[in-house]
Image (tube, rainbow, N blue to C red; front, side, top):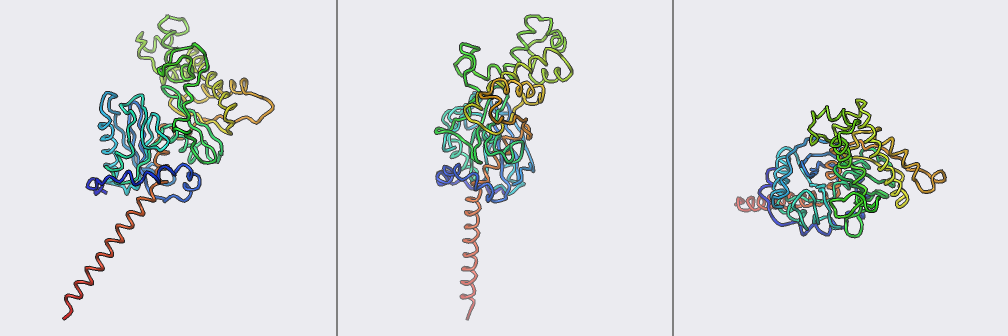
Length: 382
């Protein structure tokens, strides 16, 4: 498929209507979408993952590269994405590209309104890449794409009302109802991490105080561990010894590893994070009443060390507890590739447009061949 490099017509604008109406057709269309390979892109603060994914959610090939520095221009990030897609398209018949971006994406899924780890500010990402790649491009928030993947292929299968919580540096989230991602009027629904849970609490990078992600996230976990270590707390001696006194080397995965090995402080810190997680989930249950919460993101690797306390806190804080059905709380199954798989699968919903255009090009070529052959036959006839 190296011909993608040679075709640069600005066709993104002609796809706008199709892409804007995809959301209302998701549940119906994913069952009838063409079973063709598509590329999913997951763009985070530190890495860009690109993979070719088949119709059953299997990753056929995957590439990784570092995310360009935040100071770099938007074009540098777009160049990185285009290079990955073109590399994969040399070996696979790619029919569409889906992008899961760590940022706010508008309701039309064209512009990245804001990305905290990138230089995107109201960036028309879909239109820019559509013209360069000559295949349909779909852009969505990375939590939405991860939730879609878990609903289609992972822990949320067969759930009609699902909420996904992604615990990483902060907290992201997504809502699926009746097989549709609920993006809100302006496309930025699911920013659960910035619900205020402690008035006047810890300052959040968003500018407010007491946001949920300041109490239940990877940053919160590391902050608490480093504060105890800096205070030379007796309960922190284990982790201080592990990092040989270099407190800045304390990380979330390290805390999880030590907790699994039985370190009492690390176990307690994960319990605290889990309890705050349960409180927030209870609030979301009061507002949204889903049947299932799927917990993903890097911090979810702690598994029952985190999710067990979250379930307990959820039961204690759930409105109407004891007199209403309780949502399941489960760990995501697809791991760090969920956003990439979900982006690719959502892109299949617009792949049929490329297939139709490709079929029309083939038909035009065949008609031209028949015409030229007929013309030659006529000229050769005495």
